[in-house]
Image (cartoon, rainbow, N blue to C red; front, side):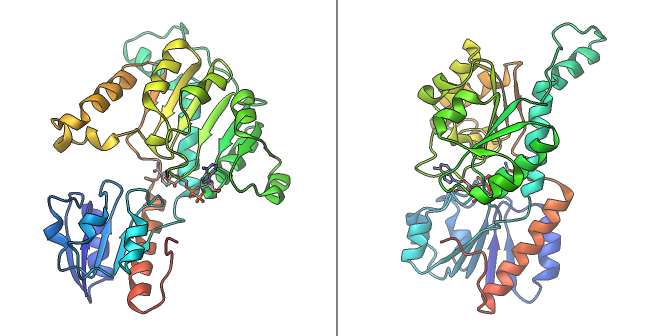
Length: 327
Ligand code: NAI
């Protein structure tokens, strides 16, 4: 059994080598792409992360492939239908970091609501005045949670600890949980109109592409904050920049960016990314925007849990006990 890992870090490699020593393993730090597909040609199992965009055409070069494992929760970078058609099992890691991502969501919210990065920058400049640093309380503010799956529900639990009111929007409302956790489901428009802070926890797919766009942003309460730890392309970046410039949004906390892969060094000179790079630089230059480099999942505990599930997924698949199969 030959297993090829892409986008792999040194600490993952050591753990995987130890736990999967029975198998032939190959490790690559770069994403799997059309250009380097030959590296996976002999693999029965391929494991990737979110910057490996797996297309039907790429699958045609992987004749031995039986299982494709993404070491992430989201699987929008994989053509799952094409895998299904070719009899390739796709697995993900659905649950390893919901509280971790929810905590990071609040790190972004608090950094904006209490102007932490601005205050820190002023302190570094020996400026200990309060000028421009007045924040606002979270208590009794309304948090609008889009997507009440694993992460969204953890965010709601934390929000209740802060004494916030919570409105939620989901394709599949879970009314029993709304009662237990004391929050209310509403329509998308109601959420946009009545929230002080909006936080995104939907997966990225055709329906959620640019869910936050020019039209939806026109409906938000003036001075709202927007938090995105889901996927960059759930938000139309151009519309976001306009809303931030006009004051419609008072700030944004972004762990994910539309086209974030273009910030990777190897993509800097790629023409198709130039517009995206320009937009992202604009966002980076705004003092009411906080950007983190897709680290919401990245805590010691979550990474350890994730490694454990990666191994369980692989060993289970080989033993004929498939788990975490993406349907
Ligand atoms: P989940 O599958 O448990 O929950 C997603 C929720 O969104 C579900 O309740 C679903 O009904 C709802 N939903 C789906 N499509 C919708 C639509 N069109 N409109 C309204 N609601 C919709 O997923 P989980 O674990 O909560 O993760 C959410 C996303 O967070 C992942 O798909 C991934 O993209 C992102 N993520 C980001 C991480 C980071 O490090 N920044 C780490 C882990 C996940």
